[in-house]
Amino acid sequence: MPQSGAAAAPPGTGIAVLTPEGSGKPYSPLCVHVGTGRLRASQAATEVILNVPETRVSPLENGLQVASEDSGLSTCTVGLWIDAGSRYENEKNNGTAHFLEHMAFKGTKKRSQLDLELEIENMGAHLNAYTSREQTVYYAKAFSKDLPRAVEILADIIQNSTLGEAEIERERGVILREMQEVETNLQEVVFDYLHATAYQDTALGRTILGPTENIKSINRNDLVEYITTHYKGPRMVLAAAGGVSHDELLDLAKCHFGNLPSAPEGGLPPLLPCSFTGSEMRIRDDKMPLAHLAIAVEAAGWSHPDTIPLMVANTLIGNWDRSLGGGVNLSSKLAQVACHGNLCHSFQSFNTCYTDTGLWGLYMVCEPSTIQDMVHFVQREWIRLCTSVTENEVARAKNLLKTNMLLQLDGSTPICEDIGRQMLCYKRRIPIPELEARIEAIDAQTIREVCTKYICDKHPAVAAVGPVEQLPEYNKICKGMCLLRE
Image 1 (tube, one colour):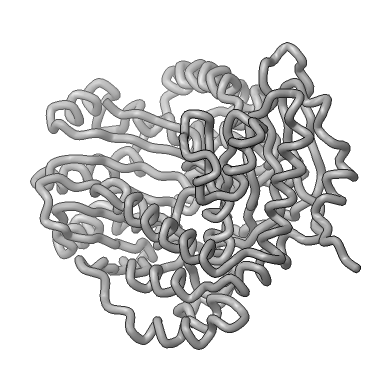
Image 2 (spheres, rainbow, N blue to C red; image 1 turned 90 degrees about the horizontal axis):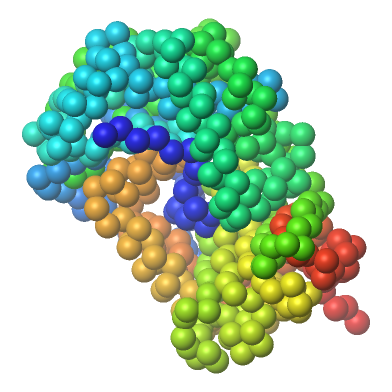
């Protein structure tokens, strides 16, 4: 049965390697980082081999990109990745992208909602969708022999949804209930607050679902206007993985998506900048048993050459919770301290990238009495990355990052998602050996330089929910971002 989801991927997920910011040109290995690793990066890049199986890419005349990887499986995943999420909304229509994603499954001119659900179930297929701050995605997983039907269904729901008034009213109630469910997920709540304080009065500071008053007022005209404005050929990628013939997929794309409008004469609406503000948001509730906190600095966008070093630094900090063993033998220094000192229930490092900015930081769940110590040791570890991280630690983190990267690509659906996301972000699919070469080119000096650039003397964004009385004052947190200088 078709399903719909609102949230983006969990923080810290995804592979971030790109072209030099704003250039639109192939990535130069010399842009990986500054420092002693440049020569190694250049040498490694010359040894990169083509990814096998190959990711083939073909554009349509209207600007839509068709990209696929054929692994010869009996199943496939095919989807439409659209460069349009909540960041493209304003204060009045915030929530429209997510609302529209829900409406895609409620019937088209050709299929009623029941017809669509029965057809998907009879195929043994799965149809799903989600909305993030910068992308909207619709995808189907099916038998390879059913690829033509899957593509036709995707085209139908994207281009021919009826957006009936009765269905809009029903879905309005569904989304309002979904908002109540999200409010019980404290990690999502904290990250929404983190975005709200970090990107104040900008599109990235607003939630994906939108405020309640918007959900109650969004109408058919709002949905149609969003489609008309943003669902253009140049903003879309038809991606597929598994048992997929690229030539067949290209023919299907021409047939079903060839009539999508291309960019208007004046060009597509520009992506407005979202300025980062070092600030905090505290929601104190002493009735809650645990405090949930996030602290982050502004990081680099997808296309910035510092992104890979920040990913390695993110891996160095790592993740931990009380269910894990290891104690002092854990590779993460922060995990060793947290475990030995009983400082928190869990923590999770994250590196969330957007087109031109990002958030690099840590989410933690603490007892009220340990908040102050936990924040102190987090900041101490961040400063250590800037000053004294070792080559052995960096080598271990690079290996772990490469392993996690490969594990994320297990199956046709994550591969399809990787293709779609990279095509929107980078305008190409970067081969795994090239990614590995760029990661391998990073050394401890690079980590120290890049972390100093983004962490030292910066004012972070802080979001905290629960019994947070013991959270240090914001000015004290800012002082913890400073190097001790003679």
